[in-house]
Image 1 (cartoon, rainbow, N blue to C red):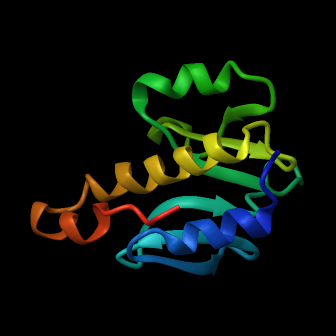
Image 2 (cartoon, rainbow, N blue to C red; image 1 turned 90 degrees about the vertical axis):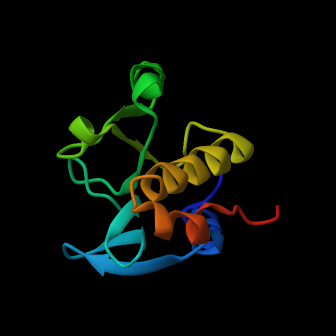
Length: 123
């Protein structure tokens, strides 16, 4: 069963060090350390709100080949994808993808900061 935007937001807030802010008008941005984004809700693409998040470089083409998932405008070069609600991924797969997005962003932090963000929450 697909997750709702409210469930996605609630899950993103459970990830280590995650914070939520409103940017660019109405985008709900989930970040770590205040400015390292890992997910965007209400991401406006062609006038529609959706969900955008970072994926592994080697999985990017596989995600964008799936129905309902496309490269995120302005963020595709950084391997971000976007999708509209109802999301084309099941709950378990979407939770794993969001947790991986969080992890990918945390891995780009300095080594001394990574440990506090890489522990995953209990299910």
